[in-house]
Image (cartoon, rainbow, N blue to C red; front, side, top):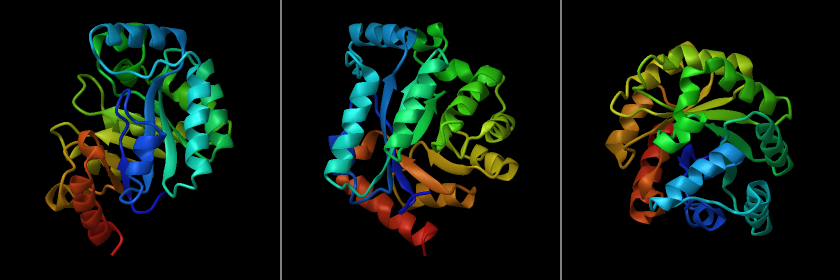
Length: 246
């Protein structure tokens, strides 16, 4: 889906076009965002800001995404753009997907964030236990023709990620971005259960962590917190090229 098969994972309030450009020498894809795109998720994001968490809260979130994607196009940045969005309702997903399709960007539905404020309004991690609603989001986005995927988290009680990944694949998803937490073997379970492009996330820092995820069947890896650290990115880039592109 992108080369080299290393992605920059979204960091709330930090992952914008400038951040993506800075990592373009090392990564093949950058997930901008996450950005709250409906009223409920934006209200939750405001609560997060009130307790000193960094969030994107522009007046018009989709116009903000449009500007960020245009900025990458204008500078002919080689990195594949993608946008991570949070929503507690379905209709804004369609609008975001159309926007991504206009810019040849991927759309990533956030079923990953676990902050209480986001879960209380019905987005983020709560979507993992509501597979029917999450699948409807994927179907809505896929109908626009854009490449759609979902960011998920392991170790959520009552959620079987391999089975959920199969549901998402049937709904039209092309990729799944997996925060493996401390259960790296879940990557193998998902890779065995589906034909989705599997991006492994959590603790990717060096050749050893890349090798572990590759051995479990990951198609790509992503870097989270150190995504603005060129030393880490270069180390991961070299390991990914050696292990996934050699």
